[in-house]
Image (cartoon, rainbow, N blue to C red; front, top):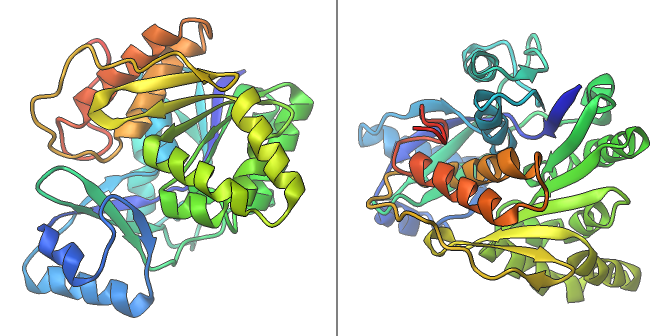
Length: 327
């Protein structure tokens, strides 16, 4: 029996340290995730190469980072995502397996998704992609694993072409009694796929979702613009009936139950310097779930555990530094 199965993207992050001028030059929205035309993406890569800016390859992915942390804390976790048997794919797979998680094996002949991660001097990260990413389809859902999981977490970055697979997994989980968790994605994803998010949030077994303040604001802003009045009603119900956790960066986080916040819970310790914010939200989710899955009523301690782990992660480079809650 798995404590948690997570279904998500499986990218390897190509980490670059850049100045804000590069973002301005290519009209990139700082802190967001942007799918670019191939020619724009290639132009950015050429600019970086011409400047001698070489990337560090680090296994990434929002759900995968959460799975990695939880496995290292002793939880039985399965991550379902697509990687190839190329060097980036083997790097991704080995990282999770070494941490103690289980994962679907690399696919022969598949090209692993490599995602550009631009880190500015303030530690903020901006993700860019040329869209060349393998599609996660319903047949890629590990059905037997989902049926043996207490919780099922679906990652928002699979919305769009991956929605049929997420919906299929949610139905499998419902039939098996797994509680459904959801992470939202960057505001641009929320804006584009709001209807799909609402369908998942109003699923019968939807229990909890994670968002940062910008993602939640985008969700609330998009709901009135949904074309289907039925979805608008369902969305408003979801924001009342589904519990959710909202992070506000260094200011803290809130837990909402039946539409009411428990109040902003600030971090017990402030981080003196942010080196890289990559994976902060993923680490927060892992720290929160570490406490919450054992005691769903202990929300304040769960939030503090999330703050603690996220604070340790952002003091290092990349989303998977060698840190734990006990360090």
